Length: 286
Image: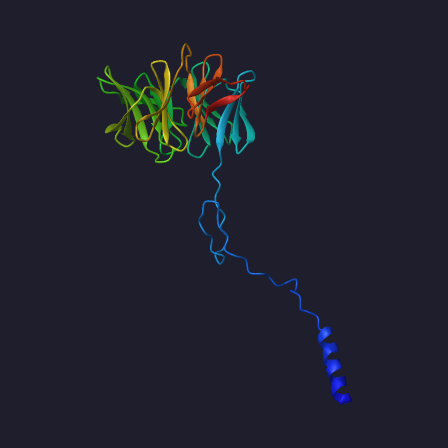
């Protein structure tokens, strides 16, 4: 009997001294499936893939110092001190077309700081698909300017119309030509190979500008700034009063910068409000 009692006591003692095993440092707890903020599930077995970040590039001009600055993802790089009115960058941001405040046109090589020009002022500037040739609208005619400093007349507008501006859609990369006739202004798609406008047109005034996401088209007409959406219906409109707009530039998806001879204004399309800007430097191109 005593033997059995002794065995029972030993069993209880052994059970009490047993240590519960703990997780070792190199063991991992399985993680549940993660979900992106957009709602798309990420498979836990999928390898991580870096998402390319498209740099945000703006061109800022300080009128007191004549400094033209490239701002890429909030990092500034001084480019030149050409007194700048407007800038159009090619698709790789390696070449700039600069219209000066004295109404001349330069091509500026960002990597070498070389200036090509000056040429006569362009009413509107757009880079050709090769990203090295500049298309220049001048007095209703289309000129081409290249790095060999040639400036030649390429296309003359039809007799019954006037080609005012040539712009490119930011997402579809389509070219659009603003043609002005005695009765109407129309912004129509433009074939860069044949120099012919198509029947796909939108009503537009002066200085047509696509928003960075291509969702809106802004332009000026009858002392107003107007913004239409992709359905060609008016989204926002505001009177300009006595303001003379030299240049109109989108600063983000919902805001425009309006440059006058002496001041700079912002136009918020969500509430159709124009407000004076106090900033010393302002956006002159993208």
